[in-house]
Length: 490
Image (tube, rainbow, N blue to C red; front, side, top):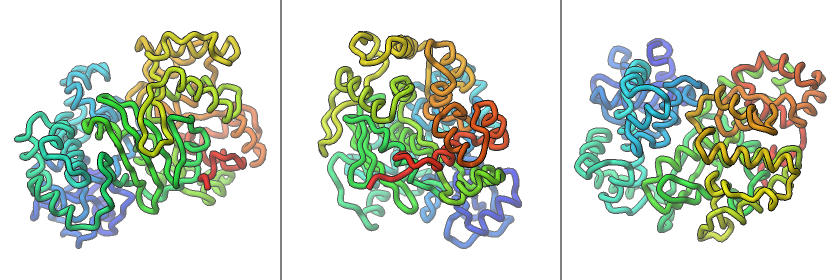
């Protein structure tokens, strides 16, 4: 979009927050870059130039606006809606892979050479993987500086910097302030009561956001010991590269409040990325809803509650295991089966608030699972143990960077994996916005209420007009049924 100057100028002049994250405005006279919705008086058109990423702005010598803080914009919705190598690379960079494994590790995951990945990212984003990761480290550092009392040396290494000198130079260059000055400025503003060991931050999103199905789904399917709904917040444990954590997510009118407790602050980038992915916060609801409203039968459902997101997962392998446990049983039964697995094989954790007890077991922890201990039909035991073996041996990967069609083919080849299970995993684990569940009972009931033919073939044919947003159409169709997943808990 950044190449369409006229459209970008209109967005800046109207201060349209829907375009935050799509592009960034760099002001040639002040050498500052802003988000489109920056509240200051827009500069003259001849003084504006546009970039596709904050990293490209920084690489061109611009610093972040202190008023609109463009580094805190929602991410571009393109990276979650596309399955090409650039989108997959961006999802991995957002997860902190470059910080942990370097550019060679990023390239290896994608199956390309480091030079190819560099060339593709430069062509589309104006910055290579190192510059993109550097911009993310700067934002992580700012969060830690402003929301914790960690010494600056710990902040530097927790944010992924290799040295304190690089940390100081980057913060000064990106924000035009020293790290100490950032902390002083934050202390002058309104502060929430600090809780030792807890990082509190705001997760931005593009309006509208309807929290009912999003948090309602997560609360209704919560696995006891791993997840819970408490005091208006969805809470769960997280397995992270350097340790583990507990997160509490609370829907607010203009953001999602996030409270993170981490055993290792180096996991902050990954934890934030997982939370944003879980809640689908980088989606473009205006574009999605506009497409779905073109169907006269879907339009009333969209108008009744616009801005529905697709509830995803913090761990693709975890959801795949839960999907198998939920085959042909009720939501309550699926939660019971998962809770038994967690108690027997999950790693115990301490939760200061007392409601969470375990991490969900990893595939390797389940690799030696005795199928006879499972209160499941024999065929489903085989399905579960085969899935766990494939995940534990890395023959199957279900993550944000996975190739969607390849993963579908590999899942379909496993015993006991039908279309419902495969598409559920594609929707929740892989994040495919076009995943569709024509055999789902709730979808078929909704179709009947809307006067549609409820056979899988007929639903698939009708859903062709909903592409590429069929996963969002599923969320709206489910609202036709009075199910707990559609409602925020009291």
